Length: 228
Length: 322
Image 1 (cartoon, helix red, strand yellow):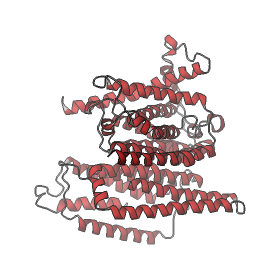
Image 2 (cartoon, chains in turn cyan, red):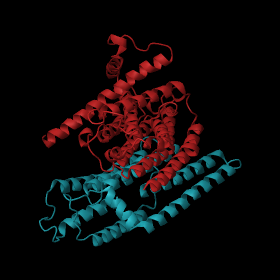
Image 3 (cartoon, rainbow over the protein chains, first blue to last red):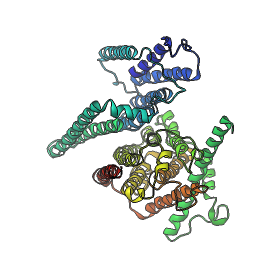
Image 4 (cartoon, rainbow over the protein chains, first blue to last red):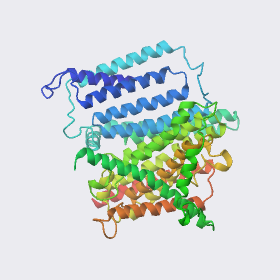
């Protein structure tokens, strides 16, 4: 949700700022791409809101698919093709599948879950609002006058992304891989310990911990994939 | 040619392929299975060796009542077959069958990622079906589907990454342009791992634990009838086409062949795809179903290490020949 808002705001903002390169572009000049961008942004935002407000757990996961897919379309419209497909591969194809897997293990009921609510609602809303504000502020501040030339060579093509990743961002990239590797090893250690404990504890507890370890492992792995 | 007309024509051709090829594979499966088991298979529909059997099946499916269980989550239950089927249609658009840009529905810059990403979405259909049916067998099927996908997507991605490293590009067209014949022995381990993992992702025997008809009654599809069930079947066969086409493009050189690469490249692609589809059917008839623990073990202890070894080999050879 925050990302959608961010991207939406970014688009609105960049269209208002005039640069020398973009003098002809007025506020929301109705080119097809911009209209599509706004519409997809609205859909993404709506899906994200439904994701956090619906009382039906599995529906929330499926609305999340719509929101993440919408984000991928936004990336496509911004010519970042590689990021868009990785977004689908990791988030829709892996993370949501994992979510659904977890939900199925919990016997999520069909229909409303009356207890799908939290007393922390306002705290969560505050944190989410603050995070969104910070992100929007940072991104808008950073890209204030940047204008993506949609007709020129794609700025987000696989080649451009790879070149900038491995020329300018190698160190963070490697640091991130080490972090993910540590998480992976940690997940394996956790799951092995669960196996040793299984004889003493109830079988359900062992299974639950296995799932959690698998979950962590899956997450790490898909992130590593994404990074690659 | 006019741009709009060109695009329309390409999409129509892809759609026609999407509608006919799975049926051809299905009919081949009927016949090949029958002959491997010492019987004839369908012989009456259409007259000549039962060629119209699947058309008759389609008519039968269309006539059946479309039942939604009372306890089911109606909308998700009804949406699931479409979610399972459409991704394969999208993937077909990006698979090149001949040399040049004319022989592919749409050139996708990050082709491998597009194809694998969209294929992964198809599994959501099975999960939705498994959960929304309000049936314990379906739920078990859905669980097994998810577990299987989690285990087998990793080796698939790793081996695809190996090919991308070898070719120096992630575009399917680019990979075919860079292909040399000696890639075949170089990438053979990756090819086998990719193909096996793809079979598992399609839930084809011997990896059909999630649909195991003799124990959990077709798993996620237990409650489906008529056309919606037919759509799931169609998705399976379209999946076979896509998997075999992808293996052909990534590992077997696609339109490259000993001769005739100029005009007849597409024949090579189709031939290789057909042979692989035959292997898929062959495996179904020959191998017993793997147990869930065997499934997981095969992936995590055999396929993942093999694909990592393939990546290492690819890297070493790549550095040496430069």
